[in-house]
Image (tube, rainbow, N blue to C red; front, top):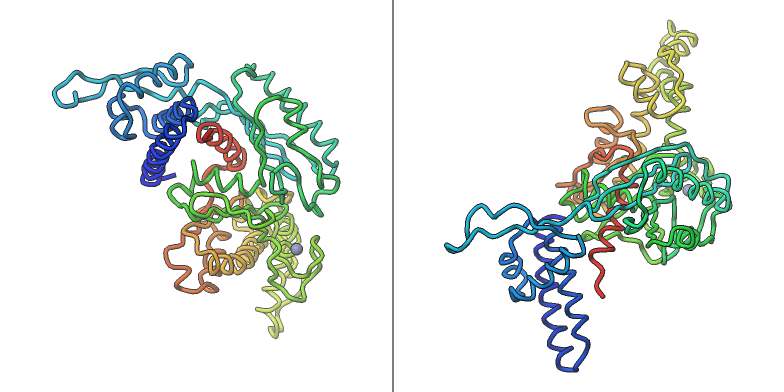
Amino acid sequence: MDNQTRRNDSGTHTHEVQRRSSRQIEHGIDLHMIREFNRLLILNHIREHGPLARVMIAQRLGLSRTTVSSIIDVLMNEGIVREGSLLDAAPQGGRRAILVHFEEDAGRVIGIDIGRSHLTLIITDLAATVLSQKTLPFNTDHGAEHCMLEVIQLVRLFTSEVELNWSRVIGIGVGIPGPLDNECHRISRAPHMPGWENIDLWQILQQEFHVPIWIDRDANMGAIGEYRGGAGQKHTDLAYIKVGTGIGAGLLLNGDIYRGHSGSAGEVGHLTIQENGIQCSCGNRGCLETVATAPLIVADAEQGLTLSQKQSTHLSGIATAHPADQSNRANRAGRPKKNIADVLQSAREGDPASLAALEQAGKHIGVALAGLINIFNPSAVIIDGGIAHPDEIFLHSLQRSATDACLPSAWEGTHIVAAELGTLSVALGATYTVIDATFNQQK
Ligand SMILES: [Zn+2]
């Protein structure tokens, strides 16, 4: 969230408090509620704009200095804020005020990224700084019952290895391949994840860990992660695209996740790009996921399919070309390509089959994203999944095809960039979700 938006938010809250205050006093309603509201207002202001002197907080929020001071005293007793350095200059000739800092170390958050073939666990402080992390192989094909038991065991093992004090945990955030129901408790439709549909994942975790649990689609969590701490900072309208076993998008609209009417917004992997193409797991034909997922790129690079097609087009009619030459060219790299990292490395070493596969996938995804940009008009499109890197062929190809297929008015000012949080976008988005929900809740 950019500073301007935060200032506006704070201003809105102040007016809201004042409106509520007069209404509640008028009707003799609970003063405790006003105090709790002001407490959250002050705490969030310090968290987002601190360190600040008490007098500055009072001025900015339109509250009395007595109110601010008494609430800060309580927050200090709770260990959520602390006094630190002095203000550089004394305001209006008075004493130099002591600055109040948010105590980032006051709690811990667990972020979980459940992928179709990996599980990433992180522990952060209250500023989403990663303190510990671990990534393990995982397989969602075993179904929710088995997999959630495994998640619980791995979380217990991980937190015990790093000697986490559970009494400090303020919540657990989870990103999972969706789509989810409107409550974000269950995966609602899961042709890609057999045995997961309509199982209350939230309840399973809640009953085990007894802390607040927040679950969302992995692409939504990734969008929040990149928006709060990565390539999407200051972009309140953005699309986060995760290219993995599937292709999903998290859409941020005015700084909030856009879910659509039934929670399935962002399924860009099922945009039709070849009307009579091959059948997709969703039952339709020619979806983006039938031509450009990470496993398809790996298979293409390994077998030299796109390269062979390009060569046969280019060489058709040239009598001297021999089929064996094409096969040799396609397999010239030698390095076996088991995953997308192998393909990227081979491409960097000049392997033509890997370069061709990445260029082709970038082209397909770019065409699909042009449709998204035309409709949604985001200021940033962030590509994740470990595949997009600045100045490399995949991102260049994607940018070129998206630009070519997009309306100039929609394209203007749109940045298509690589994600910046590495493999942690989803897990970090999950911890940001917990932190924001904890501190921004309004009682
Ligand atoms: Zn599909």
